[in-house]
Image (cartoon, rainbow, N blue to C red; front, side, top):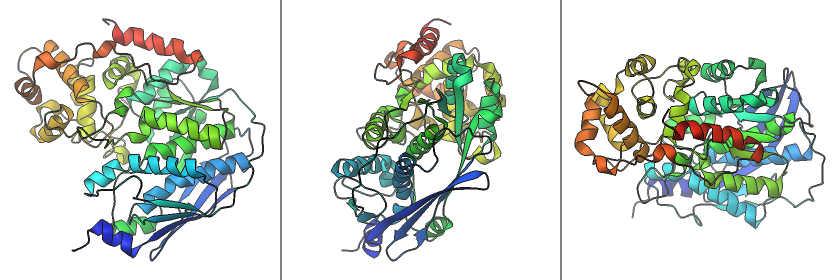
Length: 457
């Protein structure tokens, strides 16, 4: 019986090694470098740079605590390289993992690679898809004194969600720092429009090893990996450097839903509450418990966030969350993510203003039909993007329909033809997801937002 590509690659490359990491400071920046090796394949040496010229470093950049974080960050980075051939054995030579940790990492990898497995037609088993073997001797982890600055570190992606978080936390303005991975204009503009100086941004730069790109060109496996887990550990390191007490995320309750009905395939797995809970437990067990990692938007769904964002009009000209157009800081106006954001905002922002922002009347574009059917639950396969639930899409379209006079947009007509309006959940704007980790000091800001989105504003 002929082997599949997945099986053939695993046979050709039976092992992957996380050999080492290095942490240095020189020339006004911290440099993090990883050494990965694939049997019968190339070496990989990805790097991360953190400029320090404008960074107020409170804790030692290369302490044992810092190294624990950097080692763990490497455990996330390795999956981007491992997945090109999916070697059955992974050897870890530069940090200690006990049985709990090994199960933890396998859970993250398997959940975060759900889309990768689906797209590549891989039927993998969580227990058997990878065997992690730690070859590093256990060493006692000494107690250390964490120097606190009282800062809040807010990851910013440039979209509507992190803009809302920046607005909600204005009361803590003097203590807020922002965090980015690789520069994009929309991220800086989000911080500026929220009323902060650009010096408040802790910038990091992540480089993919070219050997991986060359393997992808040769036909090795490729696909989505849990990038938000990279953000989690890299933001933890930056929070540690600056003495921050909180990492304040902008992940909503909608991120918990899978993309494929009756499956656990979730493009946003590492944005889910499940991962948030797992991350908190891992960090407390293995690294430290002085930094709280939580999402202030977890009680809300995407439609609620869109409603609140729409009243923050200063962000409308500058926010971006289109992956295709990210390098040029534009909305491409032709992808599922653009269509999703367009629909979410359509009940709350003037329609002509939306078409100007996106450069396309997206609900009148027949090329968007397939994406539309996925978003609205007509096809049963939600696009593999950071998008909300079909229920949220249906209510947004229902609300848009109610305020649209005259000729309806093409895809709004399709919604009216294909959907049973009796199934529209009119209570979504009043929903409250109580499964969150928001500390008490931030609850008033969260409840202020809830009062607005659940009201008749």
